Length: 272
Image 1 (cartoon, rainbow, N blue to C red):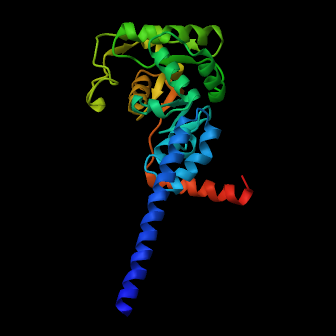
Image 2 (tube, rainbow, N blue to C red; image 1 turned 90 degrees about the vertical axis):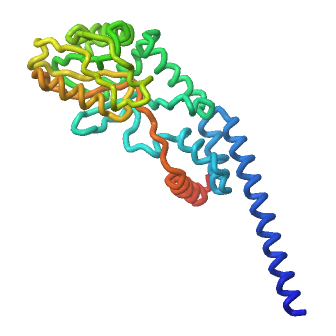
Image 3 (cartoon, rainbow, N blue to C red; image 1 turned 135 degrees about the horizontal axis):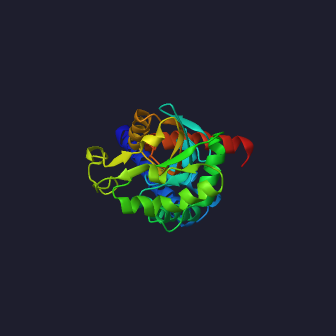
């Protein structure tokens, strides 16, 4: 009899535990769906916290995309150093696989990056702000990252080169390199590191010039380091680098949960 009672009690506890777990999972799913439907960051924040605490597996992804600055040491329009090079970027770029998870302002900025790549928008405001943050004094020349083809290079950078020179931010170095042959684009290659980028020649007039490297995206930083090295080989002095965007690297779910719990406890203590 005692055994039957004990088994009954254990069964009740197991049933209650499974019932609570089911509703916890359902609540997490609902919070995540509501958060994804919100267009603004502030509207999403509390819902995502609850979804993550409830154990929803998609919520960490949504939270990290909504608050990328909480998971990156480098911040938009703040000076940081990358392998000894002073750098500034205007905003975050998110790969296409995340496009359905982004807030409206993030989607708008990603479209701006694509427009810049195609030469439709020189993004004057973004680059002017970045140059002001970089704060390079004296005579400097903007050197633009070589592209896969000469046509793409001039289409992408002609507008911003003219703006930077006319605005007094930097002299244009657009014509100080010459694309000698077409190569495979790194962005379309399956093996980015295997793409030979040595498809350009540099003018000897670069010797002694103080230069700022300008590009659309900072991802791994390999292209930046290679280009900076080549500029220094011909005698240029690299004083910094300016990017329209930095590709966001997704943190691990465990890292996201740790940050969320920290902010959740802070919100509880402050009553927010």
